[in-house]
Length: 156
Image (cartoon, rainbow, N blue to C red; front, side, top):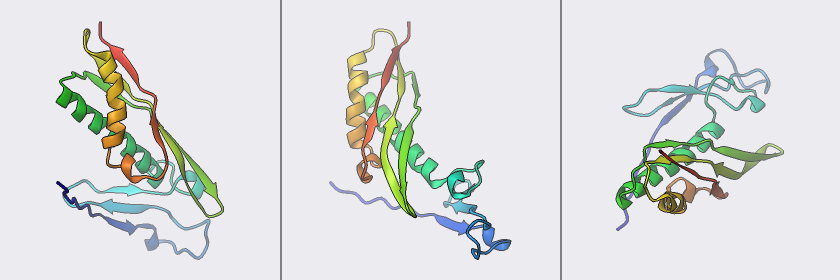
């Protein structure tokens, strides 16, 4: 059965109060993101594109969305299979290739570290990453490979 889910946000350029886009190097890249019922936050461009390095940028958000979706898919599958997970940490890395004014991500490598209790099925813990990659909505929506190098740790 197919279900549709809808997502909405408001993005507003906050730099327009003091700047214009007359000069590429001088205008602010900061912008506010608001989603009903959630804390608003300020984003910017990547520092390579003259953004504020202290703020999230769209590239950060894409990387985090992929890693978060994989983790949530993985945890759901583990719960369905009865596999106890006691810890999960990821150190994702994305590569973006810029060409002229455009570009695209060429790959994202997820590097999750999953901790399971002693005696748990470590093979299942490893295998669930492949299934999580296939069920992650975000990974299924991008046009570049999302790979993973998982590590399974077992408590003593």
